[in-house]
Length: 123
Image (cartoon, rainbow, N blue to C red; front, side, top):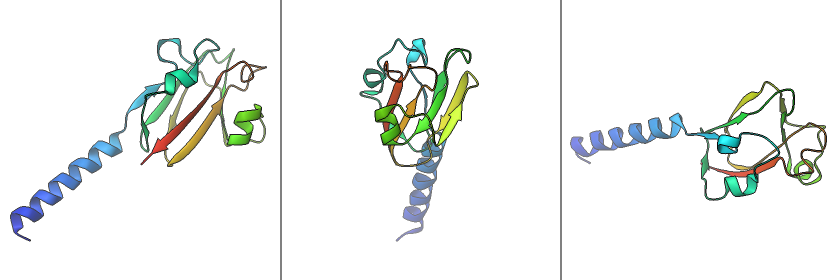
């Protein structure tokens, strides 16, 4: 391998590392934010989520929360035990693992009425 090829390979690899490390920010629900109004399945459809991206949940902390759960808890809207709970009103979640991830609202029956999100995170 020539020196030029080696240098080119190093530059390309470094550039790709910087792009993937930076990640994209996804505002959950778009302009509506994390409320009972949007259909989060529709919102997530067609979006690509990667390790290093951030999910930004914007919501009124007096009305909603965000709980990261497993698949069973997502399907049945079970709040405890959970993987993480946030109630600050502006919860950023950095996507750190490949695979399915599930989020629900922990207030009242909001999850049962559709305030939940399931995504697939790619490398």
